[in-house]
Length: 111
Image (cartoon, rainbow, N blue to C red; front, side):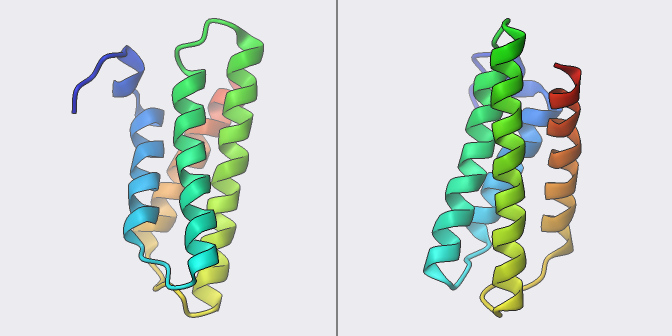
């Protein structure tokens, strides 16, 4: 991975990126939930990435709050997919989402 920005080495960036990869590889068998979860995971990652380099507190908070909302959407889509039998349960996936939520939530509170 080519790192251009310092924030690409931060724990929150790496955690949000890991969630996006995990969701992509989850192979959710319901096409609508797969699309929604994938778009939400990418939104979380990209909003974290857009907020991190900003020097403006309000801009950072808005991006981090959006990222946290998108992460909640990822969690809900995966939860429903599991209940519908459209994806297998995966504790590692749940751990990655919880870790990312804690890191992004910390950024929201810090702003």
